[in-house]
Length: 328
Image (cartoon, rainbow, N blue to C red; front, top):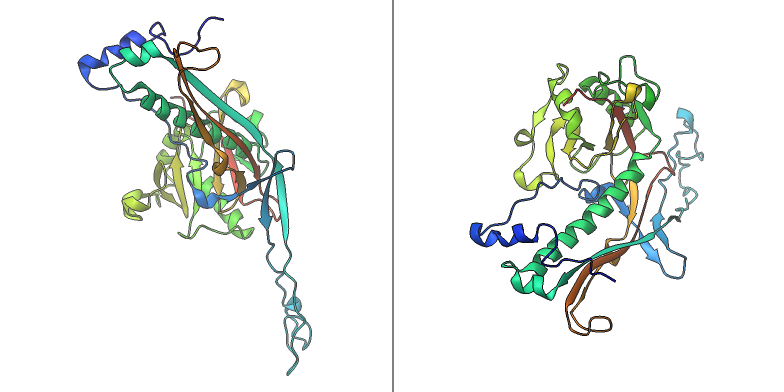
């Protein structure tokens, strides 16, 4: 069969050789990969051998809180009878499971491409393969999160569904404050920095920052040091730190009259489970072997088994906001 990997005739190969003159590579414009950068946002699940591709994570529910409806009665929890130990409570141990799926990609490079390329082509290929692996996993997790049903819709008054959203139903400071209020009332915990975090598309950032209700917006230099920044962090408002990424989910043409709809997710820690970074492997096959007796082709790729799920057992720890955006 004809060779389909990277050869001297591959599109762009001649241009690539011209970097010998410029002595530098073109810089790629790559979006941040937000969904797995914030390691406090997810519970790490592990693969269970012999379980037909099942990922599992441990769950220990919080203990019930009671004051006996405010009535103090000795011997009725939590009120003590003098000299009498209360009945012991039992910690509940459970686990949740979800299915993992195998994924992978690879590239092939010919011996001539390796010989004639002025750069270390295999090193460059390794970087590209690693980037593809991370971006693939990030997009998969982003789609799982975007399917979450704990949703509020932009608009004044708020719209009732995605298909009713218009381009003028934008993300506003008022909407963010309303979401934060609801999360606090639902006792959704904050991160250790005392805030919730959010992932937002660049398409909605302009409207958000132009909103006159955003008087409390803080630029990143006003509340954190450079070493403590989140990936793609923009600033903080109403107790939420915002991460901007072109990989934030969107629903093209899903709104009224075919406008694009954008998903902004505001979340606390451990709002989804993911597994498993630990099983990602890279594979390099040197030239030679069956089918390549003249050692003409090298292969480099990645492989993993991944899965993710939103954690809703005790109520969701996130809110998704769907909105339109001004024309770009």
